[in-house]
Image (cartoon, rainbow, N blue to C red; front, side, top):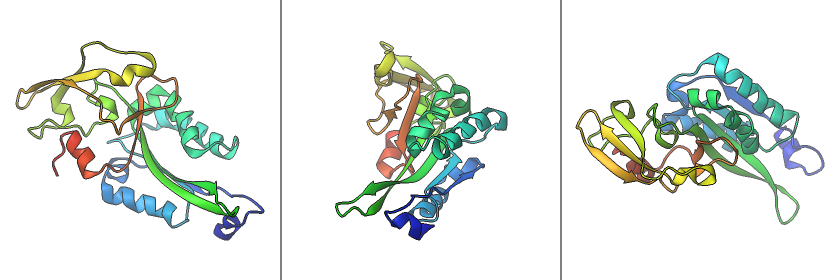
Length: 217
């Protein structure tokens, strides 16, 4: 099938895998990079897995079915298919961020097919549940994890397409630090759908990105 996809006369034929696991599978960089290799080595065109601590089957299966339908029935591009399935199901996305590693087919200057790789996470921003901008790995400067912190919007709360510009404040329950006027990192993007609170960012995070959210190692 790999050779068929390289030819310009037929296809491309889509190959994908859904890894129905959570925890370290989509969170630990070593595991994420192993999944990315499945796409980079042209074994699959997409790999989808969950990047949360846990998942609830009854919440994620309907959105997962819509993603598969969007890709294989409606021939949508992988990321658009994800945004129009999990991105429009707040309950599913609130239960777990989604990691998608994929290769899009681009046509080169000599009409040859080229694979362009990307890996991103689609997440739901929820201050109340300790996931500012979808990041449950956020940390205080003292090292306290997000579940030991209280997050709130700070100042004017914006809505519509500008909601992501709303600043944040947090109080750490471990060291009692209070920080205010925290802006969303510029590497986090508002998703292209109507779901308020839906964000995306490339995955895994770089060292500087991890430092932006308090992770020092």
